[in-house]
Every structure is written in structure tokens, then in C-alpha cells.
Image (cartoon, rainbow, N blue to C red; front, side, top):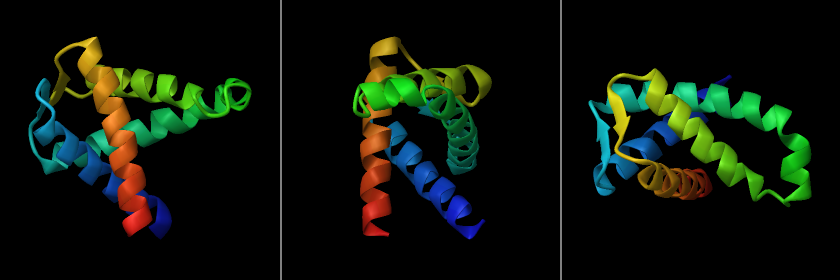
Length: 107
């Protein structure tokens, strides 16, 4: 359980950092980043479970498609989190994934 909470916390830091670095993303506060991380984690886990064969066939590249879709869904579900357009969603998903991997590697 602690591991799950730690991963959500690191993801929320990644979301917060990317939202402040990348123009086109509006994030109300860090608590919104935590909420985004929770929703993102839940939806990502569900979609990755069902898309597992595609992930295997593409050697993991399909995860980027899932991350973009999950970020778009999260944008639609949370009022205090907005992404300007689809191109920003793609870049943000890539940056959030990379930032989260970096944070998990460091911590």
C-alpha cells in the first residue's frame, strides 16, 4: 500500500512539473495534481490490463497511446485540469511518463 501511495505521489510531482513547464496545461494546485495522478493511475491500470496483448505485440510502444488516451480522459474528468489541444496532450503524456520514470529511478 505504501508503494502505491509513493508512486501516486511521484506521479503527482511529475504532473505538477510538466504542467508548469509546458504551456497549454492549466492545473489549479498541487492537490489537483494529486487528484490527476490518482485518476490517471486508476484509468491507466484498467486500460493497460485490457490492452496487454497490444502492448506485447508493439514491445511496449502501445503504452504511449494508452498514456495519451488516459491523459485525455483525465482532462475530461477533472474540472481543475485542462489541456489546450491534442498535440499538447501527446507531448504532456510523453513528458509525464519520462518525468515519472526519472523520479522513480532517483527515489
